[in-house]
Image 1 (cartoon, rainbow, N blue to C red):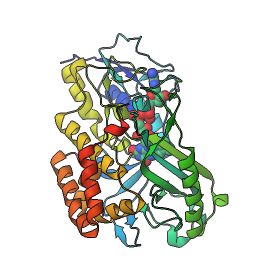
Image 2: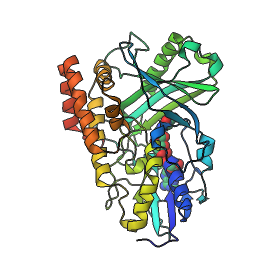
Image 3: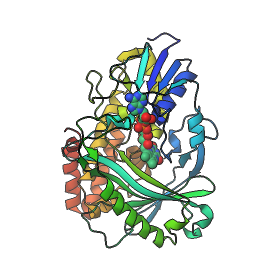
Amino acid sequence: MTSIPVTASVVGLGPAGRIVAHRASAHGWDVTAYDPAGGTLPSTIGLWCDQLPDWLPSDFLAATFRPSVILADGRERQLTRAYGVINKDCLQKLGGFRIERRALTDLESTSADITIVTTGRTHAAVGRGGQVRQLAIGHIFSLDDVPSDHRRAVLMDFTPADPESSDSEPASFSYRIFLDDRTFLIEETILATPTPLVGGYLSETGATVGSGGEVDDSALLALLRNRQSARLKSLGLSEDLATDEEVVSFPLLANLPSHRRDLTRNRPSMGTLFGFAGGWMHPATGYSVGSVIEDADRFLADMEKRGSRSRGTSLSMRVQRWLRERGLAALLGFDARQTSEFFRAFFSLPEKDVFAYLIGTSPLMTLCAMAKVAGPLLKMSPRTCGKLIAGFIRGPGKWRNR
Ligand SMILES: Cc1cc2nc3c(=O)[nH]c(=O)nc-3n(C[C@H](O)[C@H](O)[C@H](O)COP(=O)(O)OP(=O)(O)OC[C@H]3O[C@@H](n4cnc5c(N)ncnc54)[C@H](O)[C@@H]3O)c2cc1C
């Protein structure tokens, strides 16, 4: 048991660092956060409202809505759960701790009782198959410019943006959400795809990461740009009307956190991992912020109890991550047609199974949802179902161990 007052260093001030530093301060810890950028946040952050604890300020969400999903054959399913978009100013203001604007490296240590490492993508995995990333090209419109028929939230629209596109190119979908009561985002997204690597991969801090390889996402982003143009046209819009553009490219798979062994070369090894670095990102959806917010207090209670012996994650979280990574591997084995068949099967499941896989915390329910998707998929295409099972068995090793 670590006695209060606890002194803590939080290394990295992305969403995970900010949230954990804020909550630790609220628990009475004396916290210093380190980040050369002084803190970073992605341009838009969405999450499922079920994940939000009571401690959040009342203006934490800039928009809430219940999105639908449109399958490749045009059928639409309304989801009943509420989805929210974070008010970034509010997230940015979560404070109560000191910030030191500098990087902390392996060679340094702080005198704090506890060190929490949230250095994010410096822990991204690479493998002989490249790096698995989520990519998107989005445009932000004034709501008044969006044709009224399309002024509704769609989490995933799988109808093809460009009917000429070949099955060998990765599938994409259109993500269309309210950012607040005045603006609307339309984003063509590849959920997960291997991205080639060339040369030495450099982190934001300029240091070589892991076993190297600079990500070359240019061809995939160009493909998305073309599809986004076609999509906007089909929605009665064009890029010229957009007030802003969002380019998304981030890794989905983290190196497996190890309590004893330093898995990458440039991260401080003395702390407990949290956020993307610790495996809190859902590897098949790219969402981590909701689960970080949901889990921050449990994580800190464990740190308080076990101090630097804490692994941060429970056994059930590690099993959950293992299962989800198998789900990612299955997804990566599909071509574009098979991806749309898979999502037809996935969104034919009862909503409790859909959300057990997306945000659930029970490995058993996740496993049930994963098993259940095989039924409708087998009816649709035994070959695609075979690929699902093969991907599950194979796992993500090809994109992790280089
Ligand atoms: C455009 C875009 C949109 C996204 N939308 C969503 C979304 O809707 N929902 C969602 O859940 N996720 C979304 N994501 C993914 C999301 O950004 C990541 O899940 C999230 O940022 C991970 O948070 P993190 O704090 O763990 O790591 P990061 O955000 O990677 O933060 C790591 C921080 O550590 C700092 N750092 C690195 N090395 C050091 C060091 N040695 N010392 C000190 N500091 C260091 C970096 O400067 C950085 O600030 C989106 C990503 C992008 C790019």
